[in-house]
Image (cartoon, rainbow, N blue to C red; front, side):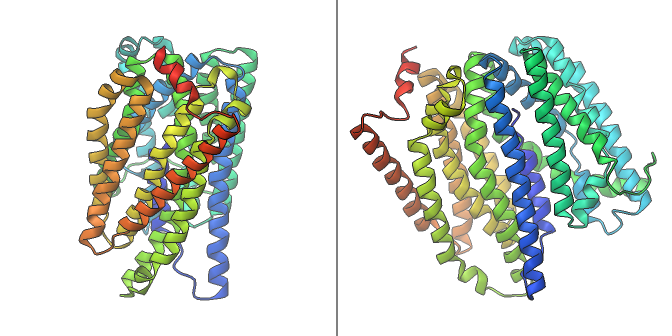
Length: 472
């Protein structure tokens, strides 16, 4: 149940750079809608399988197993982002990206990097195991993930470069399905943490193997010095951005993995994974629709789109506010219906986390506008501030009120990120603060009304179990 929103964010920025320009003809419109359909289809299928997998696995595995995997997968993601020079982004952006020498140089660098990262992960595994009091064999096994992942064909990136979204979606669908079947089968055979460990490795290995069935130039180990230098120069900024986003997005998991019971961490990880979905959806829509359209208009000196985006944006955020408000007010119900009773506390956690997700949605929308207006630096600065606030507030919040306090620190960090981006918008005379304030009031109001109706009907509140958690 690893959360990979940082990697997804990098992919979204990449796909945004490749997005189709605003449609001029009916065929252009059809192409854009087709690409959007398959892009959203990829998102829905991927996270649909993850949710389905979690629903099934929670009925087979204990919460502490999920807690172990939250820590292990977060460490894996952090390791994989080290020396991330953006192999995919380099192949896609370079005009010679599909030429054999560049293509195979990138593939060779990818494998060398995978070998190095797996060796580093294995060397650090005893230290991680002692720090988190987790069986060192689990870290040692997951240490093979970067290597196995690096063995995939760079033909996957060729699909992105050629805008073959449908083929990429179907490929990822097959890989996700195989991973789902592997995890569930292993959990049925042996309901232990090893089912998730080996399920993860099998899913990665299957994806790597399937990638060689995609059309691609012949692979050959080679290193062209000129191309290596180009890839490294371009990739250093991707590495910095990726590490900042990882630190901001995973500090809670890594910190709570040290101070909290693993069973509760597993429940929190489940709630966090669900709560992140709306924000990730907003990011994908922003970077694949709003950003490329604004960028294309800006390159032509046309400011009319930016000037007229306000009314459409207002309708979007008000609709989102209603949905998120109702979701926060009834988050405990789907948890109770879908998941094993041992995970019931995920209900109140999800309810609170959806407020953090709402602020993240607004930030994603605003960051897309700044990117489209040529101000990408604000996104990095916002994530740095998000990390600092979370680092300062997480430990204190957990000490005062347990996971409820930790979630409040997370909400505060998202609010800090939003304010940083809002300041950038104001400097550009592009502020939507009033819209966002109104939408937030609508969300809170919708949530309050629905909770009041629940009380009137004797159905309680989504936070009823929070009182029991604080007492314990």
